[in-house]
Structures are given as C-alpha cells and as structure tokens.
Image 1 (tube, rainbow, N blue to C red):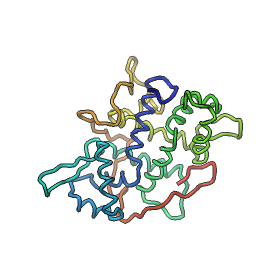
Image 2: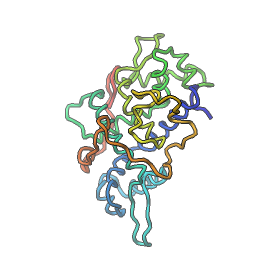
Image 3: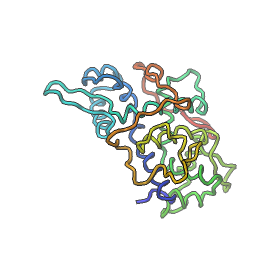
Image 4: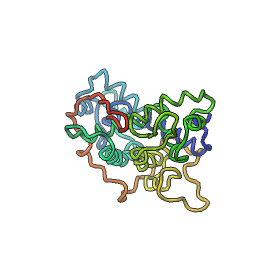
Length: 281
C-alpha cells in the first residue's frame, strides 16, 4: 500500500526511511547499540554500561532492538547468554557523526554544550514527527508548495486539512518555512541541510553502501549513471540483506569515534522548546 502520492520508488524510499527511524529513535536505543559496539556482553555487563536504565527498563529495550535485527542474542549455555551488535547496527554508526554535524549547525545552541549522543537523540526526535519524512521529501522535490497541494502528495485519500498539524510542527521545529497563512511552504536552511543525513539513512535502510548516499535521487549531490536505477522499490527494508556492505570512509562520511558520542554519565533530559522558526531540542 502506498504511503504517499509520490512515484512508487520514491514512496518506497520514504517508507523505508520512516521505518528505519522508528527502529533507532526510541529513547536509549542508540546508546545500547553504542555500548554493544565491540565484544559481546552479558546482560550484567551491558547493564553496567547503561546504569541509568533500571533492570525493568533494559530487558524490554533489549528485546526491541533484537526484534529489529540490530542486536543479536546468543545463548551459549543456560547460564551464559551474550548480546552483540549485528552487522546491520555496525553499518549505522557512520551515520551518527553526520547527524551531529547537522545538529551543531542547525539546532538551538544551549548554554552548556551537549554531548554528541544527546544531539543525535534530539535530531532523531525531529525526524520522526508524524509525516515528517513524506513532507520533507515532497518539499525537496517540488520546492514551494501550497498546503492543499502538499496534502495531496503527503496524505492522499485523507482530508487535506489534516496536513496542517504535522506541517505546523515542522515549521515550529524549524525544518520547514512559510511567509504566513495561505502562503506556500518550503524547506528551511535547516531542512535543506538534512540532505547528507537523509541520503545516508536512505542508503542504510536500503542495504546500500553509505558511499552511494551522494547518488540519492532526491537528497544526493550526484546523478546515477545512465540506465542505473537507485533505491528500487523492490529492495528490502530495514531488515539486513544476507551480507551488508561495509560503509566506505570518505571525506563526506566522518569517522565515528566511540568516546566522542557515548558517555555513561549522561542523564535523561526532556526536550526544551524553541521559539517558532528554528529547530528545537
């Protein structure tokens, strides 16, 4: 079933990215993946690395990331069970510095600098707003679009005024801009700046090497070779293929450093509101 009124390949791309974001955005998921990036850990060892999660919280979170195919549970014996990040989770890590770079450029600057992991979590929260991916894709493709025209492509078959609530949220978050009531909508500078992040997430969710993110048909900066079809609708979603290509490290893909992103002492923190016109944390 189509998610949007966009062409099938593009609609499938939006659906995959939306599903991928739903896998990694829930609170603590990325931190658990970072904690498991290395040798397999027993439950008690993992718990010591994420001490802010009580036992009753860690177990369901682990099941969630295992069910998503991001963590593997290995039962060596009745009393020896370990958890480890899958190849699918490992190939996600180079996307995280891209998110941090975007956050540093476009998110509200707090009085005290935030750990990079919190910038990742805050950015992911913005991207998982209702219909966010579809709205961003349509605006990137169409440029300036009126509310009714945007609704026709974002929520086909639904009453057109239903687009205004999620659209208004993205305006408040600073990813979408408009000159006022009745005026068309367009991507803001922050929305346009998401291109490296969204193209990388699209490549990852389609099982493509991150080196191909620059060839994304909507968010990329290079065109695919003649006759080459990228991001085909028939390709698998966030579930990993039999072998997932390792991402190439290029000048466009910052090298991930564990200590730069993960801090065991970081407490939970609610999002702080930001005035209309700029991204919120």
